[in-house]
Length: 119
Image (cartoon, rainbow, N blue to C red):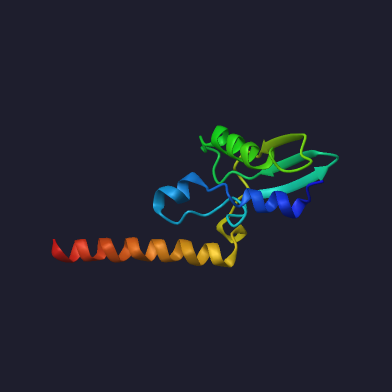
């Protein structure tokens, strides 16, 4: 049987595409996007928080989560449910994820500050 810990480990392979676009490559676990996770009799249910009501990546998340979790030993079904994108806040991120995000934002600030200085 697959444990909740093993499923959570597999979910760490699912990178939030918005963070990939900005270079921080944060996974759904460290982003705090996993609202709830249950593993019972081969059925896995993942309740996923969206970062915004305008998120158009829901199909991506469902596919990626299913593709990572379904092959695990003992998993017979995977259900992914999403919320309305109204509850997530950056405080839900792990400390390491917030630090990584801050480093990326700082690099952007430095880049644009340098560009403004040459104007």
